[in-house]
Image (tube, rainbow, N blue to C red; front, side):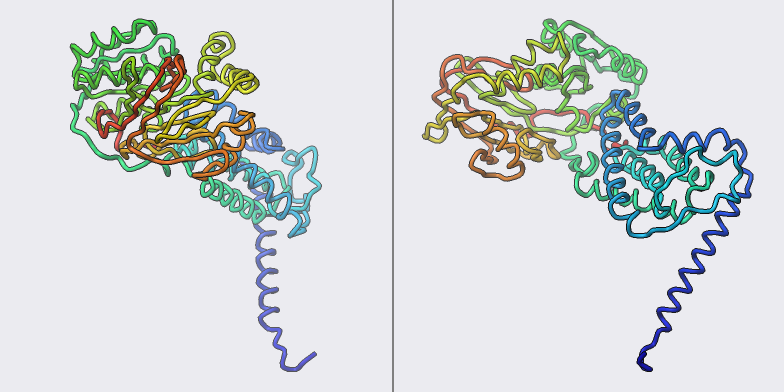
Length: 497
């Protein structure tokens, strides 16, 4: 050994690690000797229930059953975080530090698990999963996170209580799990991160008890529960429930006596209400109530609590609307307009939705449309005739998530988000290639551009056009333009989970 080689730092490090391990063992023994009132019946069972993530999958299912968008998003984010944490623990964590499990001698028999784990001790996979799920949920919805956190903390504590982990195993696992949740958030931002600035703000009446608000609810959208909850929050609001074929007439009558026009239903119903609000110069209060509620969710209104808060405090913004003009008339779109295979998909979905439900009908419709023997849509754009399988126009720029639109953070950007899927012999392959291209603005299958107006000509008679979930037939020419900040809509200035 060289006399110049100084091993003091190495020895100092080893001594520090040894002291930490000794402290860890003493804390474990203290926890084993400590009386945990009421824990004997709870913690061992809770620890077993978290095996293989069963507890967290059940919790996610319960959150999804709440039928709130925040609950569903929080559940998905929690499970994604759990999956990443589990993958890291099983591929790197357990194999990197081969620490033996604690000796069970100090642990009372009543606490011990019937089946002892056989993997190494560091870090705790249960603690990592618990922390990952709870942190992921909290990042999407603080309210749900507060409900899940005590359960997650109890699962982590149960691993020391039952004698299968040292305290440092649990702390390291929890840190790894929380880190996994933050990494997932970095890869897939939360709704709050993607929510744009609250602008441009609009002056609207503040209605503390809902006086002057007339809310028209589409009865077919299954809105009864939400309407009752809104009525409880705004007792002086007038609620009008009607059948789908009566919505347009009910909105016109409501607008004649309202200070604020309200609507509860899906995107098609909201589209009709927006047209009435524009004609009468009224602010619009939107309560999501349909299968798809893209406009309300992008606006930041997810349930009756959000809307009631905005109405009570007089909080609103101005948003753009898209307008299309055809040879037979004109119309508005708040979300999207499309030509090609998508309108046919909408028709197939509507044909089956009342029998098997909205989402299954959408899947069935897509399969039927893509398997059919058809020719691409022929349309003339900019003086050039092009075959297209799909032409999509969004009112506002969407964050791209594959072929389908994701979400918008700015509803007043003055732009139309135009995307096309070029024609070829096989629509399914082209659409799949465009979906894989995702964020790319141009690919052999897919092109995208943002403009403020667009003119399409040469459409064959009877060409289906879909807008905000509705379908009509057009022919000849379609002109599209953006109506900047045309519509005033209630929207809470500060939203939370």
